[in-house]
Length: 174
Image (cartoon, rainbow, N blue to C red; front, side, top):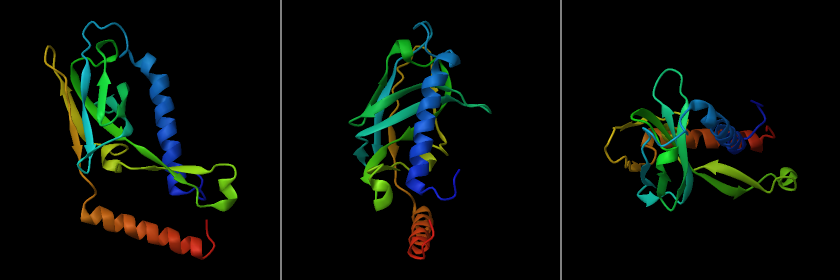
């Protein structure tokens, strides 16, 4: 990654690349065929007690090599994978993300790119997720996720990172 790239820009690139990889990898993973053996999956996603308005949820194989087997958009706190695009019985790692568009504070870049994105969901629920589900044959596959905010230690580390970034920019560093 470019050392001069801002954190929100890096997050945006990671989210975009993950989505492209998901869309390209889905036909290759063998998870989108006929409904035979696949189950519809649905549920709700909240963050800090409020429904996630817009986002994405991915279900990856739970092993050494993680392959995306399914995913859906989150709208108004709900997601749904129909049976023909659902999951086979087994264990899955879950990744949840939701990006927010914000105005680009860099006036020089704002002409070319007036907005940046910022990930609203902490990394412990997406890039570093440990959320897992178990899909069982002939059982309803409804999974609700109540994501809680950062703990005090994570918030302190984030504040320090933001202070260093502000300080570096004040000194003229990118």
